[in-house]
Length: 323
Image (cartoon, rainbow, N blue to C red; front, side):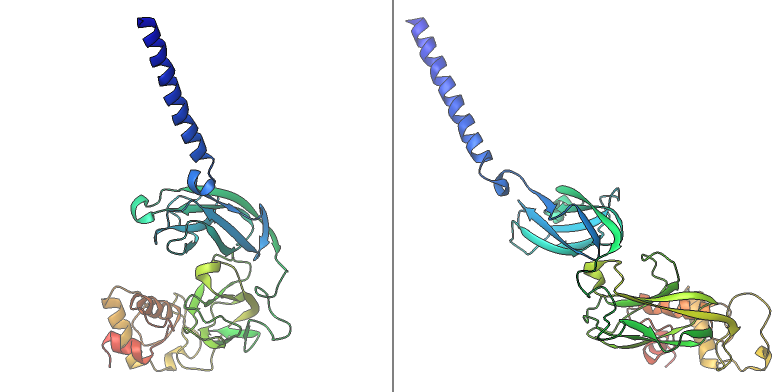
């Protein structure tokens, strides 16, 4: 009798274990959305500017679920080009634009408010150096003219540059910069954001030291990252601009001809004094406008969240306490 009871007990135990294993196996085979989570791309290789379809699945559906594209090997705390997933969505697609050539990773961060920079899944892909030509979105449009241009092709140092832009989507993350020719696309240089909502217009820059330069437009930067929408080349000559009275270079060196005869701007000198008091470096508070003064003004404007014109506009004067 004892042996029969033991056999029946063993058989029942084995039956229960088999049933549990079958249930677990059944659930594990019920599709990726339940069994696992992750990300993938529609291709393994892209051209710069080409659209990338990123598939995600198994997301918990929180408002803090997000996906980013970063260079391979970047720290997990690098947000790169990121997008949040629609709230409540467990699976679907997000569209990114391929950045400059290199190796990249798609990374998913599910329930970021709790998990922080804990990567839920990652997927690698490559961007080739050749620019995508399947559409005109990231190129100058021959029918409508260039995306960016300047009012002249050659300037003197310190001369005003009028940069014309068109075809902008009107986002708050649209911006334009001036950088030396050949600089990486990730170099911001002397930059200004476009007025929010503006699709065409102009921005005013000041010609830097002599050399060859490019104007570059970055439209919808939040989504596209350092993807150049349009570019335009120009040259700055070594001769200093003499068409105005306030274009002195703040850098060290001998004065240029006629400097002693020029009259400093009292209001600009006051502004330079205030900037120095507040920890900025406009160079010497001499009432002359130059590279350091422009940089200091732009830094001050950026910190106070106003238009970074680099000039003493009315809003800047008010915040400086000079009106």
